[in-house]
Picture 1 (cartoon, one colour):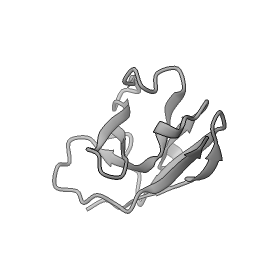
Picture 2 (cartoon, one colour):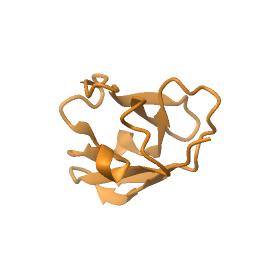
Picture 3 (cartoon, one colour):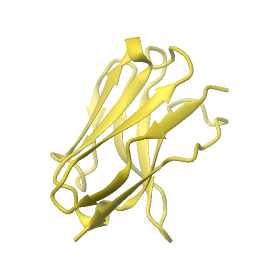
Picture 4 (cartoon, helix red, strand yellow):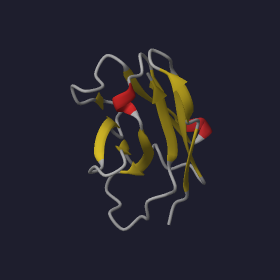
Length: 115
């Protein structure tokens, strides 16, 4: 089991920015890709950003151009930079290693965007 801890969420006005962090307990991001997911209250969890083991990134249309996923292997940390935030971005955000289906979901970090 690899421990992943999300942080950086908070309350922000529409149009503002936040940067989320996903910290691992050991050097693991050089081995596995990482996805950022979000789940709004009463809705299904959705994938919002992916960075592959090789560093390729991908985003759904809902966040493309506003969100950027990045990785610092030396710091064992993956980031999600979120700009031009909208109220519909409000959700609990989780990070998760790709290829490890038995890993538990962590507590995540709450992002709330006010209008």
